[in-house]
Image (cartoon, rainbow, N blue to C red; front, side, top):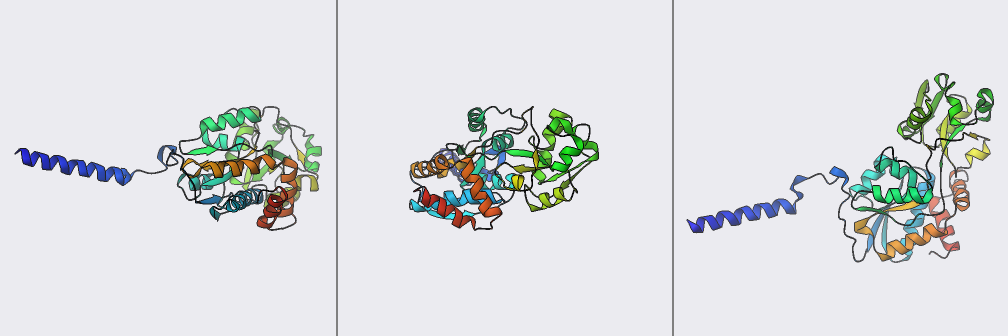
Length: 309
């Protein structure tokens, strides 16, 4: 009888160990778990991802080429999609590093979070990240969200601030990427903080040619562009002031899985961030988006100029 008890105990122990080894069928994304919280001793290969717009692709190319120059095997998974899509990719391990923006990322991980100055927003983001994800040092380069209208629309309604939209928005159409409708830095924040509600929203693209074309054709009257985009100046667009601060600081920052962060990854990407300025980023983005130069080539030229490859 004692012998049978020992056998049963051993079988039960093996069953528990087996379940633990396969994760017990748990969802790796449940509870915001991004995977291992322990940094590896040395990273040999890494996958760099990006959102689906030119600036993000450009930054991802900078990261990829700088790391490749340090001897890492680098794979690229670029133009994944909007934030919800590429965050899923870094959480499930499809990618290991992404270029991100401090204020926008903070809002993603902590809905309704209050933002302060650049430093306070960065510190809040570090605290809001789930286990397994970290940000490295933020860059002085920033790309802010803006609320944009044509000069004709601004003159017609005497618009200077987002608050000035309140009495007119019911007769206006807003448009842009799907995120613009639901974010605090978009229609959700305009409604909650300014009482602004539009007649309609048209889903177009995030700061892209569809939104610009619709704005210029007066098919929409309000959209969002990003402060590094040359289309703002080139088309004489008016950016509405934001006295209630729904538009957060958005410094560029590498978002990294902890299990793919080592000294080489950290020092290399921090060096890229430290060298990049907002003015440079604006010029580089114009070359990619307006000049139609390849992001890979533009990134390589900048990295070479700054002795990072």
